Amino acid sequence: MFCVKRVILFQMVVFSISQTAFADLPEVGTNSGTYRGHTSQVADEVTVFQGIGYAAPPVGVLRWKPPAPAIPFAGVKAADRVGAACWQARNPDNSVYARGNLHRSEDCLYLNVFTGAEKSEDKLPVMVWFHGGGNTAGHGGPLIFDGSNLAKRGAVVITANYRLGAFGFLAHPALTSESEQNSSGMYGILDQLKVLQWVQNNVAGFGGDPDRVTIFGQSAGGTDVCLIMSSPLAEGLVDGVIGQSPGCIKTSRTLASGGHERGENFAEVLGIGGLGSSALEEMRELDPQQIVSAMGSAGSGGGPLVDGWVVPDRPYDLLENGKQNQINVMVGGLADEYFGLSHLAPDITEPELTAYLDRVYGSGSSEVAEAYKDEIAHSPLSAQKIINGDNGFILSSRMWGRLVEARGNDAYVYYFTRNAPVFRLYVPDAKDLNGDGGQRTLGAYHSGELAYVFNNLGIVGLGWNDTDHELSNTMADYWVNFARNGNPNGPGLPDWPTYNSSSDIVQILGEEVKPAVHPRKVQLDRMENLFLKTR
Image (cartoon, rainbow, N blue to C red; front, side):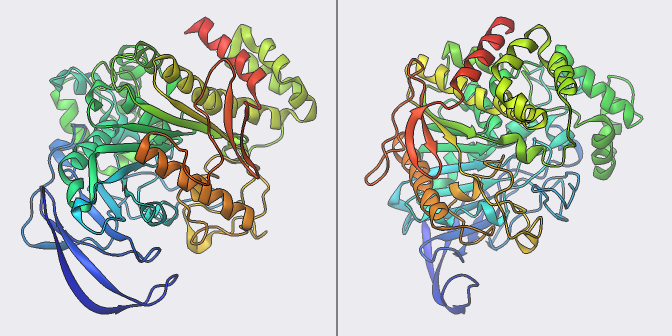
């Protein structure tokens, strides 16, 4: 165990959102070196360490390799700024998901620690966050992910970067051949597993309990934590999982069924052919910007897949068989997921929607149309968004909960219904997206729950009211309670029952927080039947 040395620094620090205070700054030793933290600008009782390297920079010969150990250093490093974001394309500024002009680098495997501990012996529950962004964008350092308001409830919160796009998920026959595990394409997930190994080795020095680690993530991050739960490599590293808008249950692509082919096509776009070591040498010599540009013209170069090592089989089958990671889960989605993801989509007609359903659902398209006939009559475009959200996130959430229940663990399933203010989630200095002061025009849209979960309504977004703040406090309490006990319930909170597939009662997180039969039960039952017929 690494000890905490308290260094009293009598220095006046002026915070933008908290009163002037004196900071008691700790130095914490890790297995690569010692870091000096600082008092949070969000919560005075929380200490923050930013930009901690958990693995070596994955550059040169380490590009498209499992993460290597962090490089040791002498002396004390000031942990006062987040590390660079992993390489990614810049997304449009007119998007709710705009991230601005990020500093990007391949040297990006950094994490941030927010600890509510007063001393290393506190043994607080640990919450490890993996961001969303389609596994092609995002990073662990935005203000919306500041973990201070969760940490002050008695937790250690960690946010982390991981390799993205082709850097993190490129499968290729040459990469598979050089791998001792005969695997490729899951480097981003291996980064996340490396974070969890770092937690086991180091979190005690920050006052965390390595025997009480909950991973939580949203969208792609929600998918990733589901994959980690499905992975034998995570055995003993994780004690609970929170999946926010996950989509991993239906993951089925393998190296043989599309993984290698996508990788070869991606390499060809870059002008590189062949399947041997010379092709890898050429690929590893490419400038990162060339790879990012090719991602735009050839797709991402990959995405999570069943590689036979990190994820040895389809997540549905692994969770159904219950072979590893027998742990509790809290999982859910939002009522209007695609109203955010497709908020710039042009209008469509009913015949266009029918053609779309035929392409996606084949012989089951008429059954889907029947399940959503009222929504289609109201608006074909809105119906398309609701169907996509249900099939992509809501159904996956409920099936994950059902699989966990069936294997004898507790699942807590939620359905977020609060129409949240619309703003640029990750650009706090230019948050007003539409010039309307954060009107609630997209409903309960994808990622709209993030500020609520992190209890950060006071530092990001605009247009919040008392109902929002009350909901955020409740959700933050639920999340931390689950990390502490494997159960979100606690004094003063609305009771949240464990999930039971026969009753299909979920926790509604909205203007009122209460348990109720899933509002989309009828539609989800039909969707699930279609999936089970073809899996």
